Length: 112
Image (cartoon, rainbow, N blue to C red; front, top):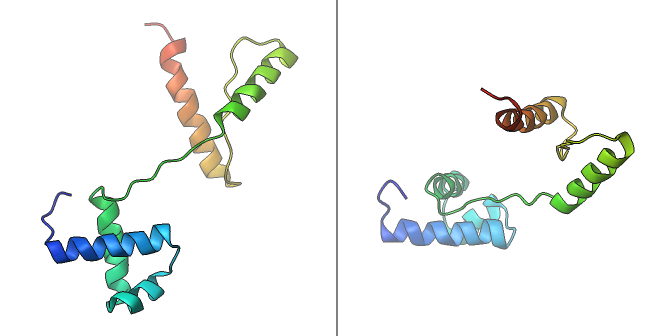
């Protein structure tokens, strides 16, 4: 955590984080239980993310993607196939994910 946090605030932050992410409570419910405003709960959640107390990790279905790539290679007789997982039907998000994947492969394909 970059900024210094007093012990009381850290304790409250941990309570808020546990209730929100582990117990699935709403910010309004937490605010009532902790006797703070809903905006305080929101601020503490943001501060916990910004400070590294809370991190997120995405788990992609890699095995399914690899199986699909293998089937695609066999069906179309191509050497290299990369399939980007789609979790959102938004064109811009899918295009960004596809471009990131293509850009990461360029270093392996293009020679100096």
